[in-house]
Every structure is written in C-alpha cells, then in structure tokens.
Length: 508
Length: 80
Image (tube, rainbow over all chains, first blue to last red; front, top):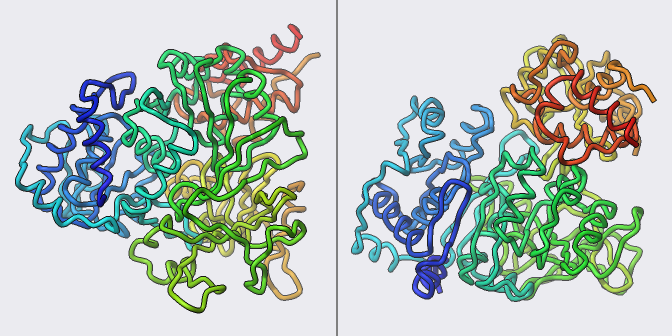
C-alpha cells in the first residue's frame, strides 16, 4: 500500500452512503468525499500541481476543506493547512518555507487570501469554484508514480530562531501508525469522532485517518464552540460522539467551564488526550462524570507522527502525581539516553534521560531546513552497525517502577501553552525585532499559564505589544510585558533566567 | 462578601493587560478577550474569589465588560 487514498476508496466502496464527515453546515458521505477529492485533484493536476509538491490550504476546517486536502493527495502533492488567524507576517514566513504551487481557499476566507497572496505570483483558487470534472486518466497516471515515502502533509510549529519549522510527514508513517492506533483502542466503523483539533495540528491526523481507515464518522466541532461550553456540550452529545481525541487544554476547557455539569456525553467510549501534561484534578472531573469511559494519555511530538507512547488510565490520580506517558506503540522504539548518550535501563527509576524515538514513524525532517533536520534526526548513537535514524525529542523523562515513561521537563526553552508548542526563543526573536528593543527574554509562568516578556530598550510596553500582535499568533503574544533597566546576568554573562523569574514574580 | 470593580479589574489586568476595562463594553464582541482568556477568568474567579462560574453563565453578555463580570461574580458569591 503506497497511499492513504486506499483507505478512503475502500471505505467509499464498502459504505458509499455513510456520513464520512460533517460539521453544523455541511455533510459529505464517503462517496461524496471521494468524488469531491477526485474533482479537486483533477483540477490541481490541470493547474500545475506535480507529485511531491506543496499546496497551501488557507481556510478553517470543514468537510469541503477535508475533500481539498485529499484532492491534493490525488494530485500527488502534499498539503499544508494554514491557520487563518495567524498574522500576515507569519503566514508569509510559512509560505516562504513551503513554496506552494498554489493556494486553495474557501468562500469565507477568499478575500483575506487574496489580500495576503494577491501581490505574489501564486494562484489563489476557491474550492467551491473548481469545475465538476473528474479526469480519470490524469488521476491514474499520478497514482502509478506514488511512493509510500512521498510527503503527505506539512505542519508548522514554532522555531527557536523565529522561523517556523515545517515538519514533513510521509504516507508511510501515517500508514504505519493509524492501523496500530485504531486497533489499540478498538475504533470501528460504528464510531463517531468529534474532532476538536484544527487541521494544521497533527492531533487531527488521528481523527481524519482513523475515520477513513475504518469508515467511522468525523464530526467537526467548530472552533467558536470552544468559547461557549453549553453549545459545545450540546454538539458533542447531539452528534452522539463515541470518541474524543483532544488536546489536554480542550478537555480542561470543558471541565473548568462546568461543561460536564451542564450535560454529559454518555455515549463516549474513549477519551484520548495529548499535547500537555493532564492535570489530575481536571481528569478527575471527567472520570466522575463518565465512570464507564476509558481515558488514555498519549505522548509524542509531531516529528514522530502523532504519538509514540500511550498510557491507559487505570485509577484516580492525586493532584501531586504525574500521569505517566506510558509505553511505546507497536513498531517503534522509544528509549532514554542519558547525558553521555548511554541507554537508561527500564529498571532504573532515578535517572532522567532524553526521550528518543526510532522507527517508520519518523518524519522526513524539516522542510527546506537541512541544518535543523540534521540536529534533531540523528544516527542512533547506540547503533554503529547500520543506518538507524532517531529523533531526539528534547523531552526529559524517567521510568516508573512499572517501566512506564514519566515526563519530567524540557531540555530547552520549548513550552506548551494553551495546547500549543512554543519556543520561547521564537517570541524573544520577534520582540528583539521591534525597533528600539535591545534585548528580550520570554519566561513562562507554568503555574498560572502566562507568558511574561521582559525587555530592555526604549519603546513603551504598549508599543512592543502592539507590534508583537502583528508578528505572532495570538497564543504567542505575552500576557504580561515588563520593561526593565537591565537584565540580570549570571557570572558567565548569560541572562540569569532564575533571577528574572524572581523579578517577574513567577513562582515555580 | 463584596467584590469590588477594582478587584475584578485587577484580576483582568493580570490576564490581559493594556485593556481599558473601565470603559470597554465589548470585550468579547470585539475579540479583545478570546476563549482562552475566558478560561483564565473562570479559573481566576475560582482561585481568587472562590466563585465557580457555571457553564450556563458563560455567555458573552457576562464577559463583555468588567462591570457585567463583577455583577456576575457578586451574584454567584451571594448564592453560595
């Protein structure tokens, strides 16, 4: 099997009239989704998309956008969904790295897309306007060239130097992971997955491709519902969702906002979460309301295709405990290397090491960035006999007494804030780009979930913040900014982040 | 317990600074505060004032201004 399209086609053949994907405004059956994707793919081929080239999708998630993503795959290309809420400068940075052949958008975002890309040579097309023609010979010709190592999608994440990193993932990695994911948790065609994650996040890869593989139904939850807990809970209950594969922050949104006191989705068989460490107090609220539901903690960065370990929650956890990351999924190795690149044995519980991953799940690297790819994807130092790339996650963990991995900290200044992976250096680099700012350091108040920017320079706080809003996605704009006369330094002349934490009144 | 407007503004400034909380009456409608800010407000109300804001009260009208939020928090505090 070379292409994920086989899953779509197989489900469309088995159950053409079953709902494949729906949101409150539109519904596509499997037959319709396949037809739309082939129609869009045909047009893309006719308009210059070649195998292994990128197509940008500038739109909010919807059934039609899913059809367009699959249409890109029919054309042999790979897709990259661009978050429409990002500021202009960020979108341009992504497009520079992506070098898309063209941009697809929808009616709702067309004027914004034209404004953004109008001055470039890029063709911008509205998905709704594409002709209703399927070019079978063209689609077949592309298909014969398909390889399983072809890229399927690119997702951009924050980069420490201020340039977003595009993680390129192949069909092969998805073909490797999704069947394991589906069988591990028993997902079948009877299931309804309520999709929370935006399509530019790899959490959505599990929703989308698990559904296509087994012929389940994907119910897209509109982003706006996450500001309104009653509307959200009504939707999840009324669409009879059986499965949530959600970011921790989204589950916390429901529990903190009292969503479960309002209405309980009793049909939920499983709730899988990832992205951050789940606070036991919030998980307990879910467990109290849904005693029959299984809860699973998933772990893994985008670079290893969704997740590499999982832990089925077996009991209640106290507030001070950490829910383990668990053990590896089938067909991947997840292990810890200590400071000297030596393997930490699973029986040793008091040594912290860096989480390293090897297997088919490894991404193809960072798009157009050989240097950063070479830093993160390296030869396994434990293997001197054949080529075995591993991904060094930068996450530090240890084993518990049952040989489950337990997350400890980050090696660098990457944080998770509101479910988003952020390099603090990315924010610092944007702040240092503001006229008059000499030096900027960004801190994270983990307890109160706030980004705090400290800087030295002439501009006033409001001016710095205003400029940052033009440069950074809203979740990366600091909650608090502090103008300082000088930054505290260590004996070695580096910024003393610990001293700065005290100045910024951040308690650990 | 009486929670003053100043208390509520202090809490809001900690969540999102540089907003004119005294006069703005469209905090949600004009996207000054987003869903994550609402989440932070609900958490902060619990932490600082020991007031739980139930799902049914999480509607734009209660969050559009510091005054409306202050009234909500005081009403919920009295109900407890």
